[in-house]
Amino acid sequence: MRSQRQYSGTAGRTENCQIGVLAAYAAGRGHALVDRELYLPKSWTEDRDRCRSARIPDERDFATKGEPARNVITRALASPPPIAWVTADSAYEQDSRFRRFLEEADPSYVVAVPKSQQVHGPRIDHLIKQAPPGAWQRLSAGRGAEGERCYDWAAAPLPAVREFDGDEPVRQRWMPARRSTTGPDEIAYYLACAPVDATVADLVRFAGCRWKIEECFQSAKFAVCRQLDPATVLRTAAMP
Image (cartoon, rainbow, N blue to C red; front, side, top):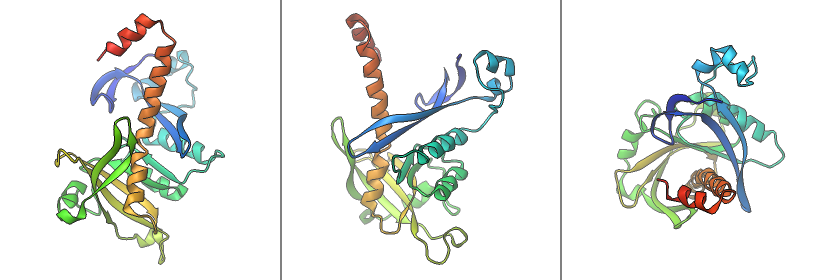
């Protein structure tokens, strides 16, 4: 299938590329990619001949990036392995329907959101700026290639929404933020929905699981390189 000029979150700019939604399953014994779905831009779905030549079914219509993500998660929840938490990057989070879908599907979640995300009116970055110094605590989001991934974290509980939560909520919504220990202006923002007895450390641990999919990508690249001749592997390793 030919690619399309479109925005790539990985590249941080518009590139000639394909965009896909991939899911990784992470457990105590390891992690692996388990599902994927290709995002099709309108330039493809509006050209049925082009789609047929690429063997894309006629019933496949245009959908925003949130719909493939919901499809992948729905299939994962219907599979045998138990799923208690979902984490995702900010590509889907400007669409509040994605979070509502997760709440209705039942798993807890910690999802990244852009700094412009509104939380009951104000932007999330404006709210986090009001956190006192004592609200931040240094926690590890899990081990990485160079040791523990330690950041400063702050998290504030959000008020219940009675029309969704009822009179006795069994889950608590949160507004966590992750700050670099070396660059205090480097802050990542999240929204979360967790069991009422979940702690900030729990939110941090599951937010860190997001890196598991990056580790899956690295493992896949390494596996491909191992199938090439040594000279090709060396050239690939030297590429920026």
